[in-house]
Length: 628
Image (cartoon, rainbow, N blue to C red; front, top):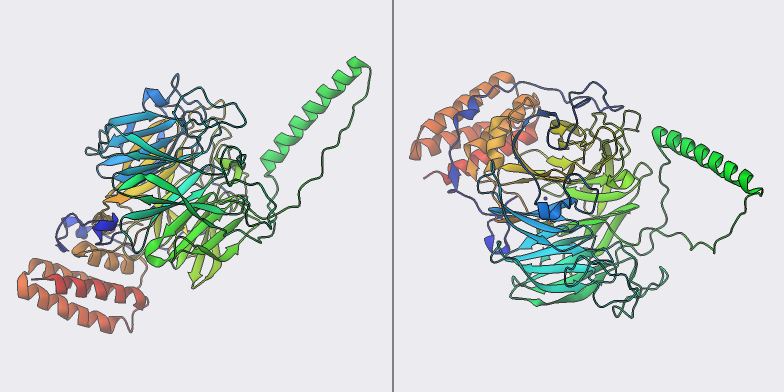
């Protein structure tokens, strides 16, 4: 949530040399394909429907993904064991090879993934957070804390006083120089806590990072934290309608503090949301009828009628006063805020002074939750967490555009809405399911995102065409409990250094790998594996670059074949030329590649998909230039 050669900023590093040879996988047959039509309703015949339930023995269904391992969470973060709601729920992930940092509502876990088929638990920290979203930067770990019962000493007794110096809502900072023994070095208190946060480096000072804090708790009393004022929307001194920005000196994290605010939500009007789904309406009517009957019986027994009441005046409605998630793309100078009632495009060229460029709303969206740019920031995918993530919103009669993704094209400072996408396998009423977190899979020439849908499983969506996103792979299990609704499933799904990692709320952590299908070739999988990160935080997107490599070249050819972007006979000739060049060495290889690039320049003027032929030509030129 991809690579740049500036390893000093912790973005990425290639594991091998500049030029990478291909495997024998290029022999895989790729055939022309037509993307499936957009679903009009959830499918009741999909292989994911009707899977056997269970905590650790549930049945599963998969396409294009292979499960390598499932590792249960530490007993220290599982209470009495089993799925126990949010108190011990696993949350988000952050990465710094070979470790994966997994947040939890009651602390965090650090996993060693040197052997992804058998992860080992390096350490576990019990320290209540209320969500515990993590980020890493160098030897520092940042953890969000929002619950008003969270303590500075990480005690489990909570905080009950209205004003208390023991309360910790904000961002915790840990030194993870030794991942086996993380040390808390600072609690940065904020006015509304930290539901999520995003790290962004200072563009001029490599020794400084900033943390954008999104907090959705109420405003703390000023007697507890100076400067926290709960004021009307028009008063810029209030703690609502803003994000808090923390400055962290990498060498001295103990000095971290809030240094600025970003008022990116001022002046937004209230938005209209959709109503309830058919199943929810029926359930509400049944509950109301039962309550009315019970009340009538009680009143009759008491021999009196009911009594009405009246509350105080409601505050004037406003737009959102906080963002849920903010995704930042420093190398492109932009960010995206998923801010409850709006999706917000942000200018972050000056990270201390973010500016709102545009805000968009849609009545199909109940709660704008998270955002992901494509690699060139020409598209932006927002998610809708309808039902808050704990409700079943993928039932057969739920509207297919509710609780979904919305894809936008981005040109300059303007977003234009494309299509919706929703995981279309019908889920049961005991499975919480809605769009949630994910990250890009670095396949050259395509925009593909891995995404968690809670108990709807893990999904891969191709949104290369903003008007026609579609599913290309999935992994799903049956419900944790077939008899009652239990909060579980994938909090998020992220691609990191060749593998997919899923944070399973109740079950632990999953590791999966991509397998070839009609919609994803082995060449494309191999090209994605060439991209390596030193560290990765899904809410801070780095720029993806690929090395000069035969899998990259062949990926573009596979895409031309799959999309019928060039004549079949010509694609056969191109593949033959690539094969011949790979068998050659030195000057002979360079000559062959230079000739192929020249021929492709001509193809680009006549091919159906000339733009993709140009991408292929560029990859061939890079390979020629890298040949010694």
